[in-house]
Image (cartoon, rainbow, N blue to C red; front, top):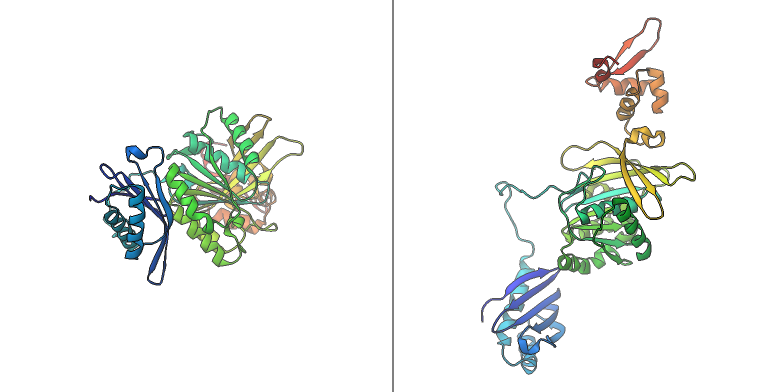
Length: 414
């Protein structure tokens, strides 16, 4: 009997023989207890005479026990007397145990061929095969923004400064709402994009991610998922997110998925301090993190969202940006905007960025800059001193303080 074609389907090992054997053996849930290698094994056939009933066997099986293989082979022969079941089971069981013993292979780095695959799944917010954290207070449109990004990846659409480099199926793991609510949101985002986007995959979750990960990994392989959205991290951790253990367990499960992910998360009510609520490992384990804030006039269907990059593991950290999100009965539309234009959202910017945004409207005295930026004269002077390449000052006769201006404006005669 020839060696089978082999592949992984989530955590399962799949072995397939073509003509003349037409056998498929799938081994899943492999675990070791002492000398025993427990598993769940499913055997089927694609032989023409079994086209209407390919299933032959499914049940628990000790991969390391000769007696178990012999007994199963005899049973299979009563169902389909033709293939060499002893040889097929021997190969499948031994290859599975060997693979489990080896685990993830060791490799050398430093001389690998240049990686030509795109660095981003969705540039510049989601790196390929890496987790991105989007965190903020309740109601800042984390879920809606994540679904907009998911729609761009699913449809291969470039919008609002987001550019998908990898396009394909998206899976939404929902710990917060229900399928009807998210279905409505996605339909309205479709309307806003005016695009006939394929559906997203959805699953309502209640177990912590580390307990559900085995099923999720299989579905990712079956459907060729390229992006997973997890909403939200606190519930997906399954325990106190201020403790390191559940957070580390959660990120280990995220890593095991093997695809890019968007992680919607929350903040402390009183002070986000540029990080999601909980253990420092949330910040440390995410490759990119974005804090989100919201501004909205009463009785308005237009929401202004500020998005503030707080961490970038590789390359420069991009500038904050704003999104104007408009709601109508049939559509949700997104438009890129300057986050500094809204006083509420400008508070989330660093002081140098707030100073530059203010000086774009014209020169200011030190005291004026301090008042408009919500800080002290001393902080303004210190920040401006660090920005000598962009900001300068001159003293006017009779003034006790300096007038600050942007060098670019000075050069343009403004």
